[in-house]
Amino acid sequence: SQQGEEDPQALSIQEGENATMNCSYKTSINNLQWYRQNSGRGLVHLILIRSNEREKHSGRLRVTLDTSKKSSSLLITASRAADTASYFCAGDSWGKLQFGAGTQVVVTP
Amino acid sequence: DTAVSQTPKYLVTQMGNDKSIKCEQNLGHDTMYWYKQDSKKFLKIMFSYNNKELIINETVPNRFSPKSPDKAHLNLHINSLELGDSAVYFCASSQTRGVTDYGYTFGSGTRLTVV
Image (cartoon, rainbow over all chains, first blue to last red; front, top):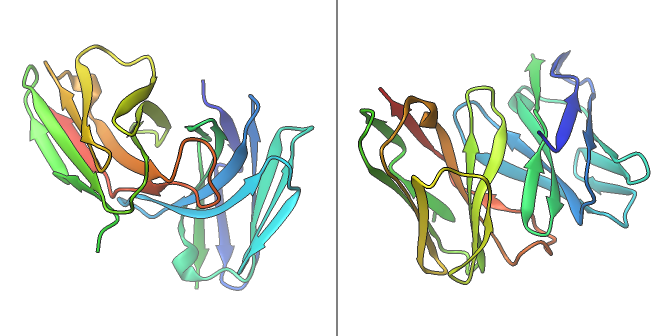
């Protein structure tokens, strides 16, 4: 079964709005990572948060991790049309990335 | 300079054929992986090699055989292809196994279609 489940499955917003997506995982992890996948392309690493961290920022991205609830969230602020993509969380357990089902984000101008 | 490159990008073949996908990374990473993404976009790890040694071998049919001639290359050979093998196969690499600040670097994928 999938390591992570993501919520929502799809998200449609307008440019300038914030996009928030959540992820839950099942087993213990060393870190949790978020990736972006544009249609028909490979995955691009966005941000990594270690299991002993609670929050991390990178540019317009903010990720939180709650290991007690086995959950993480990704916030993209001031979204742009170029942010349109699928976003995946992945728990890393000693070199094994276990992915969530992904959130499809559409940002309209 | 492409960091993780896979060839071919597209592969269309008939059932029963044998095919290979090649992967090369120029990042100096120690660990390489094969992931499979199905039609519903679920990504699942298949294999991982660390310095040419197989360290992760998920429940994958024996028809799939990875080979790592050196730590910069990881190839995937598939025998007797079946319709269910149709998917996008991603190669990835990381600095080392499991302990990284930088995440994994993925190739652009090989879309395999078995007809």
